[in-house]
Figure (cartoon, rainbow, N blue to C red):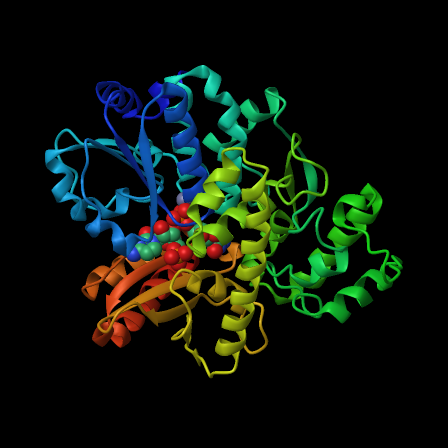
Length: 467
Ligand code: C5P
Ligand code: C5P
Ligand code: ZN
């Protein structure tokens, strides 16, 4: 089937762009890896058509401040904020997104979002994927942007086990065109850039006792399975033989299993073994060669407001912007480390179905990443959803919530829970099954947390009483 038949709204979006080929277009995208990849795909597409454009990246609370122009293209955001886009009603705009749409659809809206056609926006398609389908429908030659759409999907962590749904179609485009290769591998971050014991130390979903967050434990683990690694001669995952990887995988699974909720045990292998995606035209050893590592570079740029650097590299710059990206990555890691040490020095609250931390002092753009990292820290529960809050002004909290991907194989969908809880307490929230966020008036925090926990309880009960 043609892609325009599979995804509604694509034809309308292309027609609308044609009407504006001599106008100035504004691309508005999100601040994470998927948002930046998506912006790069659109920018490249518009460049090739000779359409002048500007790009800006925003967190969701900034959307109401964006002014309309002749044509605005929203990517990786917009669907969840339809009710805030009224001022765009008298100008033209296109939404290319994969988040759950909020109420507020209006006539004539050009809205491309595969969740409206029955696809799953958490695992089957990212914002970059939607932008890629738009781009390829404009011109088949834009197939060379497919690898970037895979980077975006990995940035949104859609690659549990392997990419599926519409992401799979994009993967085939990238592979057939010699841009990307994929193979079964260990799903460990830092495939070609981190010594294997370091990569194991940072592996946290599923949580592996005495390895996750524990460098010595990771070294001891390798020695237990007969892999002696000499200091200074650390191999990376990419250097290991198939047999060594097989041994590591089965031992990791065996060690994780006793600690996971029993009903989800069967999904553990999906988080340990999975496909790796290699951008074969990038140099060996480059952080851009592995799709997940590429995404991390873009995420670092987005979260540190270095959008031009990230988008420039995604569009192909391997000169000065590439050098900059390495510096931003270093800075991002430092920021995360200091945020983590601030939070772990405080007490946090453990409730029956959620754990809550105060993220005051942590920038709202990295609150979600910090929440994910806390799940593998001492004193935190790896299989209990975690929620953090930080001030964005005197009256408002930004909330981020995360959970292990394992829980999402059951009935947990944090995005749905936060949407309902935020709505019930006068805020706005949304997102995906393992990762979501909200904005909320400060005086409603306690009420919100109670409501969010209640939603999680309801979701958990669904697994016990499947109807
Ligand atoms: O808005 P968007 O869909 O692009 O954002 C999803 C966000 O959630 C990304 O920043 C991604 O890194 C994060 N995420 C996460 N843990 C997951 C899945 C997604 O932190 N398991
Ligand atoms: O900001 P954070 O990384 O925690 O966001 C995680 C996910 O939740 C993203 O996909 C983001 O688009 C979504 N989100 C949302 N509504 C909000 C805040 C975040 O849909 N108000
Ligand atoms: Zn996204």
